[in-house]
Amino acid sequence: MKKVYCTVLSLMVPFLGFAKSEEDKKAVKADTIMVTEAKDDEEAKGAFAFSGYLDSYYMANFNKPASRSNMGAAGTARVFDRKSGQFSLGLVQAKVAYTNAKSEAVVDLSFGPNADYGNYGNLFSPLDGVSTSTALAIKQAYFTYNFTDKFSMTAGQFGTHIGYEVIDAPANFNYSLSNLFNNGPFYHAGLKATYAFTEKASLMLGVVNNVDGLGDNNRKKGIIGQFYFSPVNNWNVYLNFINSNEANMDSVGNTPDAHYRVFDITTSYQITEKFLLGVNAAYGSQKGEYQGYAGPADSQSWGGFAVYANTALTENFGIGARYEYFNNDNGVRGVLTADGAGTSVNSVTLTGNISLADGHILVKPEFRLDAYPKVAGSTESQQFQDSDGNWTKNSQTTFGLAFIYKF
Image (cartoon, rainbow, N blue to C red; front, top):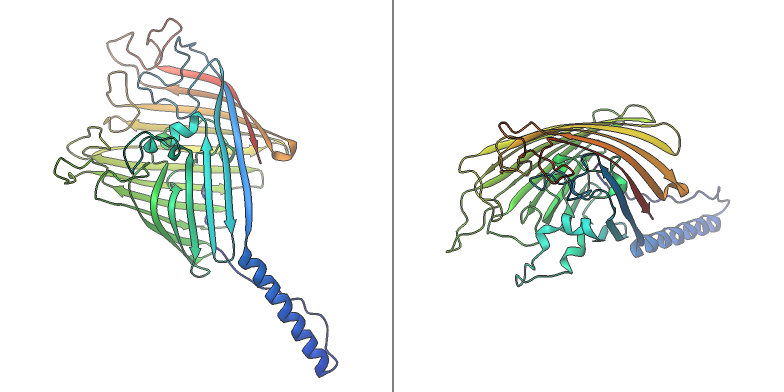
């Protein structure tokens, strides 16, 4: 889930007692100036913070697919937990942040299979078009300048504002990611500005190259926005938007008429100290080509919603459930049948969270069921593979364990 950060600079100078004379008053004033200057100097220097995590998992698939893959016929049924019947590495993150009173700089690097999956837009260098390995490691690289306590601007490559879930495994309650996450943006490169009206309301607007790409594939720019408000304590609401033309330029450098557009709402309510309820809903549309892939001539829509409920049973153990429905009947996003037609999916996920080593180690047992409509008129063109390598299953049930270390 996302957080809104507002920097508030306050200076606290201790009151040392009543001065009995003018000399005493001068001494108190001198001490106050020295304390103030020392604190200002400390804040100007700022501070470094280093953090990160590594995760791995084992996922058993009850279909026992011959390919040992959870991806389904269209290859998009899961985001990161793609392999079954084997121990698999997920992602390794190394994040460095430098912060002072007026600014922040973040370099967020990621490595491993999930880094490749999440940064597929960077497979080719935006400078010369050849294969590169260095860009794949950059998950985020941006800096923020606080013009005032209420207004700031951020430039660089940053994670998307859209959606309830994020790419970082420790930050999500569930280990496997939703179809809403998989079919929305992962990150953007550009410039955004945030204004905090109050502690309970803020607005972000920005200009970005496109969706999930370090370089721009045309002359158009995408527009992003987010309005945050908190109706009552412990209830956060985010209204998110993106509109971008994702079509490649033609042979003479013109950009065809096209759009990729998403309206998204994310909300969470901490009902009690131990119980959290969350909702994510999105409505998107696409017209024309999408980064080299053919798209509909007329605008076609897709969308879905997910409901989250998490509770802490003890200090070291919690359990959470997610139900999601995603509809791509028009075939413009990644939820497809074996022959490329649009379809829909219902997913139920039940996840436990076991915290060890003072919260540094997380073990997440997880059960997940994905159910697709049966493809009519066929017994071997369904969504999932069986143990003989045939596509006879329209649902998939997995159970696994994720092992995460964060620091």
